Length: 239
Image (tube, rainbow, N blue to C red; front, side):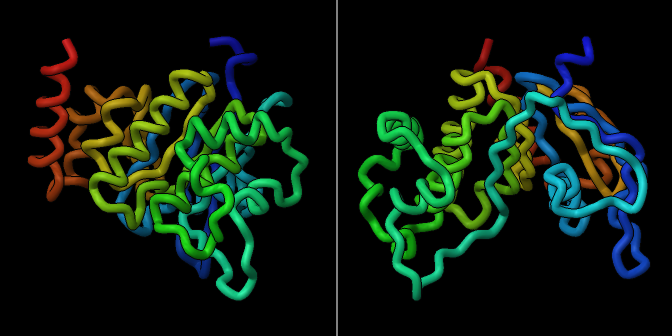
């Protein structure tokens, strides 16, 4: 893979907070068109790694290289609208950016929020908020989407719909995706790479190889039966 294909890479990233190691010697590359799912137990350093990649946290040591042409669209893990500042969805989407009306409508149509544009942001459900955040991320025409647990707090139907939407965006627009998720049996389907983090990178590879990795199995022992059953059922129905 030529260097021109790499959108973002880290080398030996270390981060400590209050004397505790959050990230230890983390190195990986994310290339054009890839779909990397970042998984790991609670407190493993996933959100911290995302913030390092976005430049929101400076690591104690190590380096981050971003391609000159990288344009990142980001959705945070937590977002809540201020109930004391009423703002419509369309005004929120235009906030601090000048968006062509036709492109906004086209993107809203893609993400299924066209009927919400005149609604107040504070009145939306969790699933609707996630779609609005995804729309706003896409309006910057990114070639890399970074999604921090986008399906958190959604019911099963909402999760499935959102993952399907992210999958469609990845396939149709060809942008790379780095997604943090707890939802193992969903993410395995679309990922080109799975990166398993527990302060350091325990294992990384294609879903099929990760499922057989003993370190992965140790970390997710309590979820493995469910995961294997779901993954194999899906896998057997795709051929």
